[in-house]
Length: 332
Image (cartoon, rainbow, N blue to C red; front, top):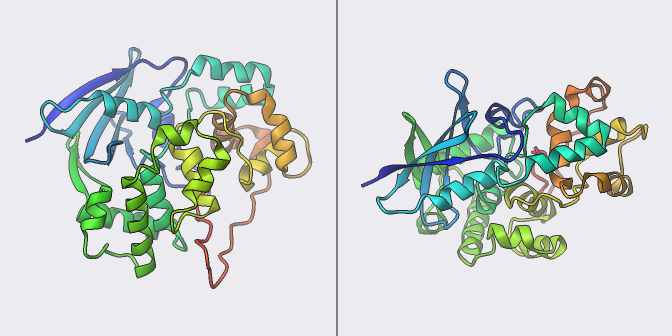
C-alpha cells in the first residue's frame, strides 16, 4: 500500500520552476533534462520519477510553485516512510539547497554574469536525481544518440524499474541497483552495456555513488574513484561529479561550449583555455559550478554571446578500449 506525502521548500533567493522545467531543452543540439522530468505548461506542474537516495526504491514527485515556495506531492512511499529524505533529494536536484542571494552577488561582481542572471531570472542548475542515475545514463548514452538513449532508458525503467503515478500521469523510474542485478538480461542493451550497468549497480551498493561523499571530497580523488568502475571514463566521472552531487564551487573546464561562450563574453577572441577559465572563475567563487552552468544554459540569450561559434561535435574513435565521451554536454 502507498500513500501521498507532501512537503514545501522556501528557496533563498530567486528560483524559477519554469526555468527548471525548460533546463537543457533549448540547447542545440538538444541536451537531455538531467532530472528526467516533464513540465506541464498548462498548470505549471513539474513531474519527476527517480530512485531514492537510499537506492531502496523509487518515488514520483509533482512540484508546483507560488509566492510561498516550491511544493511537492510524493507518490510511491509506504505509510510511515519519512518524506524528508525525498524533500532533501529534490532540493539538491533543483539546487534549492543553495543560497540564491549569495549567487546573485556573483552577478554584482561580474557584469557579464549579472546580465546572464537578468536574462534567465531564477535559473539554477538542474541535476540528475542522484550520482547513481547519472552513472547509469552515462553508460546508456555511450556511442548512442540522444533519442536512442532516451528510448532505451525508458524501456529499462518500465521493464525493470517502477512505474508510479505522478499527478495523474504514469512515469517510469530507473531500476534500483538490486533490480538491475536481479535481471537475467537488461532489455535493449548490448552485452557490453549490460556488463557496465551491472558494474555501476555493484558500485552503487558499495556506496561509491554517495552524493555527500562526492560533493565534499577532493575533486581529483573523487573522479579517480569513479573511474575505477568499468564503463566510467574521464568524461562520465566529471559528469557525475558536477551534475549529480550538488557541488557548487568546482571549477569546470574541458567543456567546449562553455569555453566558446567565455571566450566571446570576456573578449578573448578565441575559446577560453583552462588557464583562462581558472583566472576568470575566481570572481565566481563560491559558485564556480553554478556560474558555469548558467553561462552554458543561458549565455546565448545575450546578444554578444548569441553568435559565439558552436564547437564541433565529439567524434567517436573506433575501436574504443575505454568508453567514448558521452554525446551530451557536461554541464547542461
